[in-house]
Image (cartoon, rainbow, N blue to C red; front, top):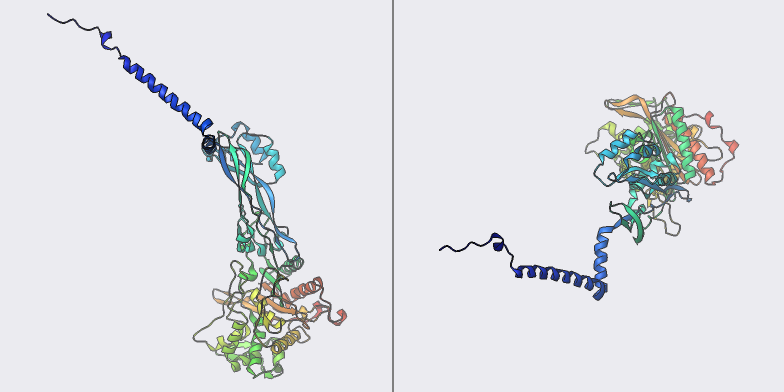
Length: 581
């Protein structure tokens, strides 16, 4: 007999114990949740609040950087050369930018709608893109007042240079993020830039800032930098160099003025120039501080150093006579001529006339070793060490074997190279009674003991050379156009052929003049370099000496140096003879 089958519904009945198990489990989880809430909110208030605050902060708080004010750069009298001004940079969150208002935003930013749309498309999916950096605050606030969704602003600082192109190649400039990338802005970047601070802010669901809630670390401003530059003299030199570029049609040029007694560089200008406040027509080559980076064969400006070697040898005095007839001399296969036959003249007159024959005969008697040694002592072939980026050391050749022509051309400034600043540093030895002070672009602190200079030559030797330099600007010298009304000055001209791929170029020159003023108690050393002047007035006496005259006159009067002779006692500059040596 078969057993009756069970009903299908009877077979699927869930046991009662399972129901109660599930209910109990849910109640247990609920009890644990309630217990945890009680623990965090009531029983363990401190730890509970700390935990909840931490979790909430992780989801809503962010830390932002507070920009630091970059230090002020000023001249020796406190005139600003580089300052940081507050600006606002506009940025947008492309994810939340209201595209229906893009035409309005493009108009406010002076952009083409298509350009703005392309930028938004390029940053699609990202949360940040700059709309415009470093806007004038009033204009930026006007745009922010429109409350365009997704558009925000942040405060920054922009570097501004009040003197513009006048001191640009010395001071340098920064990039858009405020980091120094040229000149003293680069050299002293760590000193100037300061330390950014930190602040907390609350963000919304989109990640955008809602409001600041506190400063974690205050920004520390950068330290100020006081330069040795005198902005008044800097403007004077800039004006005179631009004038010289126009008059001579030269390719480039530099002027350096330094205080021989302290080693402070008072002014340094170059051409071509650039405006650090504008990117219009900006060329990186024009940012070069040529007075410290470009090297030239110094030519006859080295003859006073050769005179030092002659005086120190004991074989010559300034009155020793040298026969320069017939006005030329052969060294190997090379003929070295003078402008004319000077006949028998003194060593002093050899320098006054810049006689190649006279200097050659002195060099043949002395040998090149003592001349080379003097050049090295005066700093040729070594950087001046002011810490300026890109400073050149020049070249003082030290050959194992010297040809006969190389031994004598060294004596009148060929075969070596130097920067205008190196030449000025060398001449400071004559102006400072034989002592060479270390150079600086920073103002000397009167409360700090001045650094000790290095004695290079005897004071008596320096004085004798100054007397000869004074004669160079006199009646029989090559630098009559260097004279200054009311003051006695001294210096030496130089005219060198430029070097091309095939050697020296016959019709391209560099004109130089290195001088000091006033000769009774030399205070300033001024070096003028005019690169590739055009026309007949291409020599140091015709192209560079007049520039020295105007700069020296302005410097002496600006710095209140009293006249040393009656103004009527000196003939007008433009009526004085000036050679090309």
